[in-house]
Image 1 (cartoon, one colour):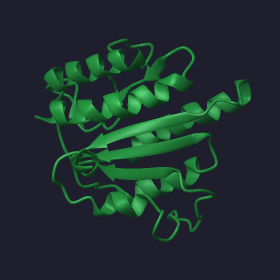
Image 2 (cartoon, one colour):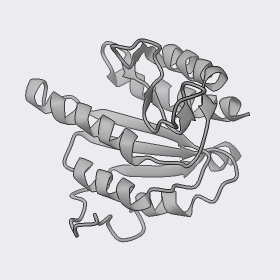
Image 3 (cartoon, one colour):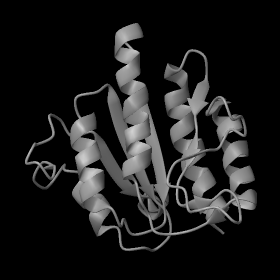
Image 4 (cartoon, rainbow, N blue to C red):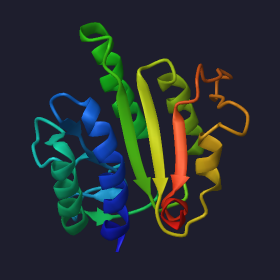
Length: 182
């Protein structure tokens, strides 16, 4: 079940990064799901259950929101990251004017092959100027070649569809099964 394999990265990453979050408020979104049975697939939906705020309280709140979504949201493909990266970038950009010392980390947990590679690259290139890092955790046995492309540690820097290059590498990808083998 997706929930079990995804809870571990939430706990592992969350316990590290929440130390740096003074108010322990974490924006939480899902992607690739139908929130309403009759509605379209959403690639950036609020997990908090609060229509006015996407924030949850700490790692326990994040785990609870995720577990609730697994039982109430119909998970659907395709795997699209661009919209959720743009949402995180919007929050990071807005914070620059009010608190330029804030830094953001977007954790994406995925079990699928990315279908919007160019849109995702475009979003990452735009976000590379912002106080934002993105951790992508692959769960399951999917082909994660595209995720390794996004993590430009060993390959060329990401390039947008307009030819702009990232100002810095903001993505780190790791498959969860590699972490648990060590």
